[in-house]
Amino acid sequence: MRGAARALACLRRGLAAAAAVQPPAAQGALQRLQLQRGFSSAGGRAGGAAAGAAAGRAQWLAAVAVGLSAGLGVQLYSGQQPAECKAADKKEGGSSKDRLIDKEEVAKHRTKETGIWVTYKDGVYDVTKFVEQHPGGTARIMLAAGGAIDPFWAMYQQHNTDQASCRISTLLCELLALDPFWAMYQQHNTDQVRGILEEHRIGRLKGGQTAQVTDPYANEPARHPALIVRSQKPMNSETPKELLAGSLLTPNDLFYVRNHLPVPHIKPEEYRLKIEGEGLRSMELTLHDLQTKFRRHSITATLQCTGNRRNDFNERARPVKGLEWDGGSISTAVWTGVRLRDVLKAAGLEDDDANVNHIQFEGYDVDMEKTCYGASIEVEKAMDPHGDVLLAFEMNGAPLPADHGFPVRVVVPGVAGCRSVKWLAKIVASDEESHSFWQRRDYKAFSPSTDWDNVDWDAAPSIQNMPVTSHICEPARGAVVDDDEVTVKGYAWSGGGQGIIRVDVSADGGKTWHDAQLQKVPQKR
Image (cartoon, rainbow, N blue to C red):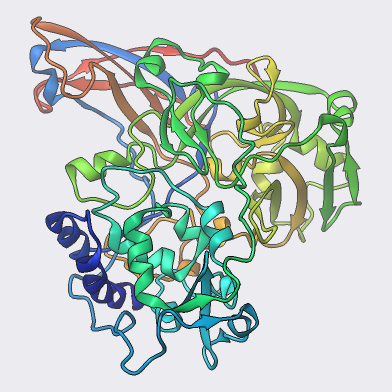
C-alpha cells in the first residue's frame, strides 16, 4: 500500500527520459496520486427517472440542480511527499541490456527470492522491486511473473485522452506492475510507457518474441458513431446529453455502454444458465426454458454508471482517476424477462432459508486467466415478493444487444449496476457475497482522507442502493444565451426504489428557485 508514494519518486527519473511528456503536466501528476476506480452501471426503478425543465433568468450559467449525487465513487488519495525508491536505478556492474536470455531462464524468475522477470515482445525486464510498490497488491501481478506481459496489455487497453500525459506516473505504477485490474483504466501501448519500461530491461529474449498476441477485442460488436467513447478496449461510451433530454427512453443503439472485459459471443441455442448453491437443487436452464417456463415481466428501469459526472470532480474540485464520464453514462429502457425470485423458487429456495444471505452472479465475459466478471446482491432484494429483479432477455422490445448482455443479463433496479451482471452464466445461493474482485476490492466508498496507506477494503460494505442524482443537459456547459429567459432541461434519478418528488433549479446561486416540470415514465406493477 505504501508503494504508491514510493513509486512516484522512481518515476521522476523515468519521466525525465520520456519524450513528449510536458514537464508541467508530469510534475502535476507527480504531486499527487489520486485514484478513483471506475464503476459499473446502476439500475433505477420506475418512477426514479424523470426529465425536468424549468424557465429561469439569463444568469442560468450559475444554475444549480438540487439532488446532486453524494456517491460518485471510491477516491483514494496518496500523500504529497513520495518516499525514496530505487526500483528504477540502474544496477552498477549489472548485465548488458543486449545479452540474450532464453525463456527457460525467464521462467525460473517467478518469486522474490529468484527475482521477478517478465518479457515484452523480445525484451526481458526485472520488475522485482517494483512489485512490492504496487498500490493494488501483488496477487494478480504475479500472474505475469516468469512470462510475457503482452497478453495483459492486449486485454486491458485504454483510450488516449488529453489527461494521459498528466497521469503518466500512475500509469507506470500500474503497467510496470502488470496488474490488469488497475491497468484497464489506463493507456498501455504508448511510446512513453514503452520508453520507461526500458529502464527495467536486463536483456533480450533468445529467439525473439515467442508468439504473436491475438487481440481479444478483435470481434467486438459495431457501435453507433454518436456514442461518446471514453475507452475503446474495453468499450465504455456514453449517450450524448442532448438525446437524454429529448426522450425518456433511450434507443438500444444509443444506450450507454459499460464493459469490463471483451464481449463474449454466445449462440442462443447453446446458452446455458447454471443455478446452484445453498438451499436449492442444481439446475441448468436454456434460453428457451427461461422464455417458456416462467411468467414474463417488463419493467422500465434506468441504468447509471456510478462514475457518471466524474468530470465534475476534475473540473470543479481536484482531478481523480477513472473513466472520464461526463453526464451521459445514464440511460433508460424497458427490460423484459423473468423474475429472479421465480427462478430461485423453482430451484427450491425458501424465503426464510437462514443459510442464504447473498445471491451471486457470474458472467460469460472472462479475462486471459479465464476469470469471469462477478457480483452479488443481498438475498432480501433477490427474493422480495414485490421486487423487480429480472433475468432479462429483451431490451425495448428487442433481443438484448451484444453490448448489453445477450442473450441474458441481470437487471437489479435501484442498485449499483455493477451488480446487474451481463452475459449471465451462473447463479449461486450463498451465505457470503461474491469473492469476485469487483465485489470485494472495488465499488466501495471511502472518505476523501482515505488513501493507499490506510485503506481497509473489508471495513466498507459493497455499494448496493444508489443515491439521488440530477444533471442539467441543456443548455450545454459554456453555451452563450442572448435571451432573458432560457429553458433548462435535464434528468433526475434515485436508486433504492425511491422516486423523484421534485426538482428545483436556481439561476442566481440559490437565492431563488424554480420548480421543474417533471416527465416520468409510467409504470405498471
